[in-house]
Image 1: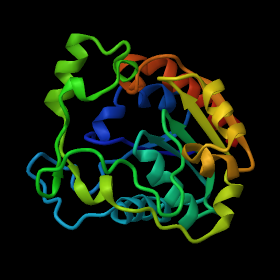
Image 2 (image 1 turned 90 degrees about the horizontal axis):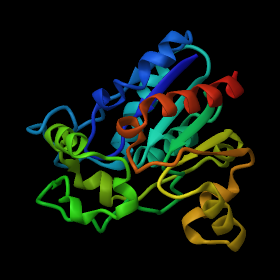
Image 3 (image 1 turned 30 degrees about the horizontal axis):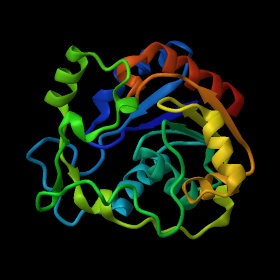
Image 4 (image 1 turned 180 degrees about the vertical axis):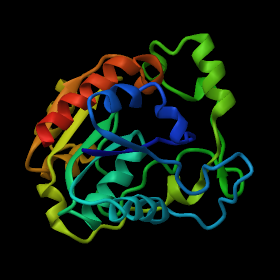
Length: 234
């Protein structure tokens, strides 16, 4: 199976480097992506939008044969949901890593401070304690050293969706910083945060207790959770 891995904010394809070996060893072909504007700290980010990130992933899907599995971490969840909207017949399963689908008109995070066209990586006190679980001092230093500013138009721009067949794409939510039981409570209560997720017809929840970046804090466990979801897709 072709597995396309979409990183969250401030990260490039290398952020998956401790996850992909186990996927490849299981016989899958991995396509970790670096999205537009994340090529380097000096890359041009002016004018880039969420649609540009979605289109970049769609281009990868179109270059492959057959169905694919999409993995989206954090803000990458909005991206893979947009791809499922654009190519619902090509996606065998969406795997949301501590993330979820972003509905029509939603924004990923327009509260993140911008500096011109960039959203710089925030100081650690800008995150919740739950985000930082298991993120050791060494991991924090390595993360900050590799972090690349996110394009403002991606973080603050609105999601635009067109095809209700996106709700037919099966989904796996790998819950990390808070348990999946809380997500299910929000769905049952009709919380706006989970409104789009509630519309997906086939959703499974997997708990992987750690902080918001399991690809750094628990990469082996994340790989196994992804593999189990891919197995269900095939």
